[in-house]
Amino acid sequence: MKTDRKVFFLVFIGSVLVMLGAGTAHGQGPTFDPGCPLPYANIATTPDPFADCGNCGVVSASAQPAAAAAHAAESKAKNNLCGDVTKRTVVDFSILANMQTQTNATIPTDRHTLRQFFSVGGQNIGEGSVVRLKALVREAHISDCDGGEEVNCNKTGPEVNDIHIPLADPTVANSRAMDECNSVTAEMIPHSRPAAWSQIDVKTPVNNAVRITGQLFYDNSHHPCVKKPDGTFTRDSPARISLWEIHPVYQFEVCSKTDASQCDIANDGDWVAYDKWVSQADSITQNTGKDFRSKCEGLNGKPSKAGGAKVPGQCPATSAIPANPSTPGKHKPKNPKPPGL
Image 1 (cartoon, rainbow, N blue to C red):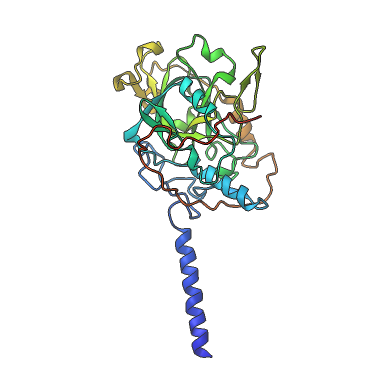
Image 2: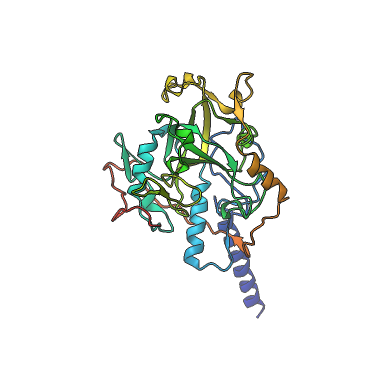
């Protein structure tokens, strides 16, 4: 009897240790683990003040297993800071719009079909690919403070929510003043977010183009705008032409000249890191996110929307995906179609 109890005890302890070990693997534990050096390590806020929100955020305690897994996978993708920055691909607004038309509405839990399905200059890109975009900033604001986002553990406050940045096409005249349905989106996540970046909503560059580098992410929780025959749009919120975002932002730079055409996206000498640019005496900014920040701060950390009970999201295993498929479109989704409204 004593031997049986001893064996049972050892098996029980072993099982607990296995579970704890699985829980502390990269992206699985209760605290955030980027799994790589931060792409903005030289200006990051360290240690991460938001480390208690793990890589896969939270999910509804009442969610069905498939839905919970899909939300956790989405959060994991949103928090990916480990894209290969040595393989940056230059994209523009037309590329992101064309990617939208070739993306399935239904996304599997592992999000595998979103990766490396779209060919640009002989290279396949998709979710997880690092891209670089030249744009104009329409505005910037603290995102989802009224109820928080699952990826950010439904916390509320300027420090623990994403900064949402709608972008306009610098090649189109007066594009900043056009309907936001013509925009694309960049998001700065709260994990170790540089102090200067956390003020971009109140110190927004509005006269200078920007160069944004980061991971491509497909925001399948929303719908893109659809232009109607009369020229108006059917829209979701937030409005945008494509659900393909730069999320999270890895690098944010400002054109050294006010004429966007004089800054070549390929010429590093034309661009100044935002944290340095914003401290220059001649930098011109606007407080474009004032109202959002004021409302967010007014909540005092208590979201106005009741979201129900939440539990930590269980991160999916990383899919084995070739680094550079030899055939363009190899991972293109079957039966591509625009997401329905």
